[in-house]
Length: 224
Image (cartoon, rainbow, N blue to C red):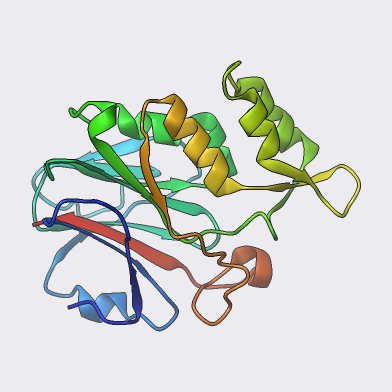
């Protein structure tokens, strides 16, 4: 069903776990018209919606979605923020989180992990396309927030996730690295990344920082 218009997650997930990110060339509506899709009302928070056995008629207010149900597509939208895909090694549980710097700092990834029955060393994660440190400039207060939250063992790596920006008092933040630090600290070690910047690749990706008025990329995961 998936063509070149989608980016397939490159991770060591079981065969029954399917995960993709759309591009500008994708038509999500047409591709998934025969499938049940659960979307969210995203607010840059930390709430995780637990999907049971049927799709809700409305969009729950949450920034992550977790399920053990088969044949239901979990969907979030991004345009620079980091889409984070989760699954367990046995292919029984999946989740998908929307992680901008606010949600990341507030604990959206840790809250998502709490939903899993599998041990942390049995969880696989793929970090999808997001804005890279080459273009993600933030204020000093963002850096300080992450440094204040860092443990003694993660302080140095957190410092290294921020490089001095070209503007005074600004820093270039590495969302991928910050997510990996948080996940590693929570006990998740099996992490892969798309390692592409949505700002740089204007042909394939929407970017809020680049265009302000823009579309959204769909991140999709489901169990068969």
